Length: 323
Image (cartoon, rainbow, N blue to C red):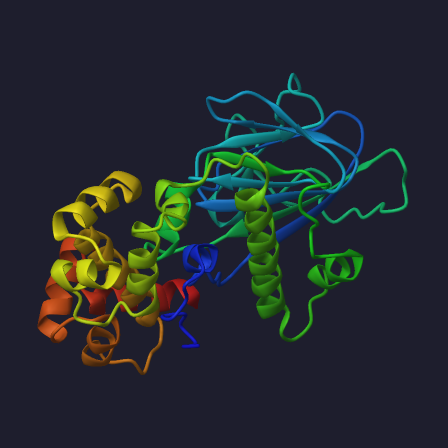
């Protein structure tokens, strides 16, 4: 398989491919009594894992949701949310971008980013042990993932098991060489495991295109586009491969996926290109060829229409964000 996942035909793999954080931040907090924190860090994806105890998460504009020991909550979209011992507890700390901490009145706080962070009373039976992970994403493939998720998705312990155990929790707190890559990959693993459980649970509400993969006509067409996006696909060629007329394929594909086949292909190519641009040695001509554009000029024009900046500007921005 291509290391960039260009030949994936599994819809969930296709959805999660390219989601790789850089600069992940974890906070481990041992909490007792009355506590609450408001998160306004703007992270497009964040994770909250209840290692022990229980808590309530209230997304902005939403109802409080209780999470218990072993549950994993995925917060999507960057809107503020509150994690507390009780829905009625007022936050006494606000978490801002860059790890800044203030009081609700805006007074700067020096110290841990969440209440009692770093106090690891992990043996106390009455406390709540909470692990928070903040994700950093770009506007490439992850955009499809963000669109597929609700503001708050809770994966209960009996549905999906968190793959990160006590040993990793201890590693997260150690300032040793290679720690950042460990944090990045631990957060990736936690996210992928949680979302696999979320999308495959009984009664899951999945995106239209995800359901379309099981359609006898649209499913094969989707898999061909996903497996070889660089192929010079046309609607007539795709229809011939699926054994239906062009009109039938276009109508059925649009109804189930939400966009025509060639629009889906163009967006997939540009999403994969955004991921490939993170490779410093990949020239625009190489990226264009790998995702199916005729040349670097055509690729650059399409990329700028989609993202609002040129591929070169995008690469510079992502390189700076990763350092």
